[in-house]
Image (cartoon, rainbow, N blue to C red):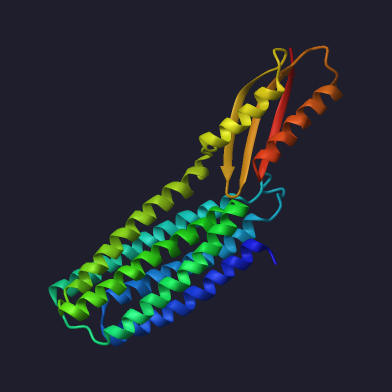
Length: 284
């Protein structure tokens, strides 16, 4: 099974279990902060489902309708996930404000605390696995899913600490206050994810470090007889693209020019994964 698909499926399973646990604990205790965590996990589940299908589609080979492949499906999924997270955060804030205006006591604090700690532990291991595979495959969809779960770790721990404080102090207004703080973290997460996922849809250039590496390789291969121009890079999901025009001496044969370009392409692909190189040869 494809490594990306397998880890995306793991995220779906873990989020499904956590939603059931959090929702049950939230309804039993009447805690809006626990229910907000259940909503957060539901958004994580939607994100995991979107990531699962997007990595399957993005790995399809290029075809007549998509000659540059399907990589941008991952970026589209990232944008959708960011919007979902934003909506969830607004809903949590709305419910928390209602609880502030109509406060009530929370029951079964111990159950809520245990569920939050289980959630933090499960998400720690799943997010670490997602980040590992995302880094290996350079997948924006899996990275987005891992970011959701990483945020969920902190929010679950925050809610757990809040429940402990309510237990010790009896100050039940801490519950909606914590829910609002959780929502603010989620809003920040949605903004960061949207910015990262949306950029490649506009054919944003590769990172400065990647561009620098590529140019160093080309410069090392080229002597005074070779120059290049119209250098461009872009990204589509996992896949990266670079193209430029290479000026070669007029006495160079077509085969020699082709072999020279192949050597540059091989070196670039050795240094940067999932990259396609296109070199336009011009005789000077």
